[in-house]
Structure formats: structure tokens, C-alpha cells
Amino acid sequence: MSGAPPDGSRPGGASVLDDLRELGRRDPGDMLGEVAGAGGQARVALRAAQAAPLVGPLPEVVVVAGMGGSGIAGDVLAALAFGVSSVPVLAVKGDRLPAFVGPGTLLLAVSYSGNTAETLTAVEQGLAAGARLVAVTSGGALAELAQSRGAPLVAVEGGRMPRAALWSLVVPVCSAAEAVGVLPPLTDEVCAAADALDEEAAALGPAVETAANPAKQAALRLLDRLPVVWGSGPIGAVAASRFRTQCNENAKVSVVSGPLPEANHNDVMGLEGGLGPGRELVLLRDEVGEHDRDGRRIQAVLKAIGAGDPVVRTAGKGPGLARLARLTAFADFASTYLGIGRGVDPTPIRTLDQVKAALATESGAPR
Ligand code: F6R
Image (cartoon, rainbow, N blue to C red):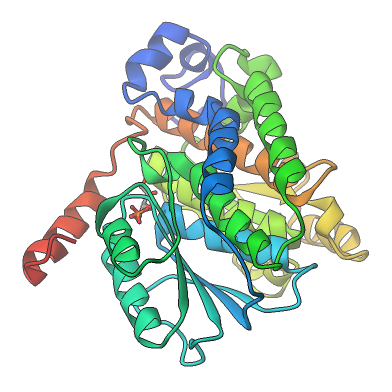
């Protein structure tokens, strides 16, 4: 890739992103189609969650165990619960659960494949400690474990890459929290999120040319740069993390991300002297979720590092899930265009698969 400014002449430039045939050729797994279908996915997931036997009582604490593209559902739930839940919600990413997990814990286990080693080990620990389990998965060992224990299971549609199943996973996880009184009634909020995803797909999808498409513009700005992604408010913070992991997996690039205002207290020092030619700042703002002073904090930090023109996307108005949907749609489209612009196939994740395979062989276990 050249370091030239984004224009139609460079290999990953607007000419590629605006050529539908070329997009199809460079995206054989149709990650763009998966992203565009997120609204429909959310509606199907709502029906699956409503059909599942999810009921109370209110737990003492909710723990969501999951990794990677599944684990982010726990971050989403924690962000939504932040302003409304009377009990703590914790997302755990790893084999071990905190010592407080016990009979008063609702353990939401989320693994798209149902075969992720860390998640399964955490579930075993939770069950041994007497936690109440709800499983969200498309199958695998997690589905078997839930069924053998008589635990509620939300079976989500299979056949996707886990990160492309975000809404299949987020909706049941949030529905399980709603069923026990941790979140307020959710149906309207999920429908609003699904509508927002459809609207974003219409605005950011492949048929919209670069000149009018902020996700394509962002991808071109990020070509050959290290993206530094900051998100404001609990929902913006989740979106920043999603932007990072989507760029990792769809575009195969490293990204730095963090929440605001925390980034003002550390990350900002990495930008002392300015962004320079090698970095690009991305701000994902959820103004509804910001503290009154966050707007001034953001202006102050932009001035201090001389970042006059960052990539900015705002979450708009409406319920939390709809605001999140606008930001994740931007992250999902921009990261996929970035991969295509870089000339990498967005869908496969060979190195990640290689690591999982090596560990499965080592332990002799299928996971
Ligand atoms: C792949 C992806 C990964 C997986 C992770 C855990 O698209 O997003 O981050 O989500 O390796 O696997 P699952 O989701 O099957 O538990």
C-alpha cells in the first residue's frame, strides 16, 4: 500500500471500493453482505430469545462468560445495565470466574460455536459453584452441556463467523437479563436497533459511493495508518472496542482503542507531539451517554494533540441498543472496507484458527 492520499488511483482507493464487481471479488465470504444483514439478524434473534424459557428471579450478580466476537455481548450488556441495573453485571473473558460466583449468580455463557475452551471451562466452574446457567450458542459442547444440566438454552442461527453474529448473540444475552429484571422491557429497543441497522446499511453499504459514504471514507483514511480509536460513554466505549476487534479480524491490522475520558489520562501521552503521518484518530461518540463535561474534555484533548480533523461518528438519539447499532454498523462496514482496501480477504482468520488448533491438539480435547 502506498502512503498517498486516498483517491481513485491507488490500489485500495475509492475506485476499488466503488466497483461492486471488484468488491465481490475481494470479499468472497461476503462479509459486507453479513454486515448489511445485521438488522434482519436482530429480528430473528428476538424471536429466538422470546421462544426460550428465560425467567427470574433477580440474581445477586450477573456474569457473562465469552471470548472474542461472542464475549463482546457481555460488554454490551454491562454498558446497557450501567445506568439501570440494581445488581452488578460483569463480563469475564477467560477460563476463570471471580471468587464471588455462587448460587446467587446468573451465569450467561455465550459462545457462537459452543466450543471455545475458555468459555466451557468457566461454565464448568460456575456450575460447580452453584451458579444458574443460561447458554447462548449455535451448538457445540456448550449446547450439550446446557441440555444435560437442564439449563435454558437460546439456540441461535449457525453458519456465520462469530463476529458476524453480533446481533444473534447480543439480543438473547440482553433478553436473558430482561427476563430476570436486570434490564427493563426490551422488545421496542431491539426493534429500534434493527431499524437503525437497516438505515445504516442503506447509508454505508457497498452501493453508496465513497463521496457520500462515511464508512468508505474512514477506511481510506485508515489505510497504512495505526487507528487510535476512542469511544465516549459506556456505549461508545464498547463501540471503540468493537472497532478495534473488527479491524483486527476483518482487516488484519493492529489498532489501539480506549474509553473516554480515561484515554485523556494515559493514551493521550502516546500522541504527544501529534498524530503524525502514521496514525489516524477515530472518535465514536455516544453523546447521550456522556457526562456533561465530556464534550469539553474531548475538545481539550483534540486541541492538545493538534488533531483538527479526526474521523468522528456519533450514535445519535434513541434507546441504548439503537445507539450502539449505529456505531457498530460503522465499525463493521469501515473495517471490512479497510480489509478489502488492503487487499486481504475479510472473512478468514487463519492465525486465530491456527492458535485454537494448536491448543486443541496439545490438550487432546476437541476444543
Ligand atoms: C471470529 C471471532 C472470534 C471468536 C472467538 C470465540 O469471527 O470473532 O473472536 O468469537 O474465537 O469463539 P466463539 O465465538 O465461537 O466462542
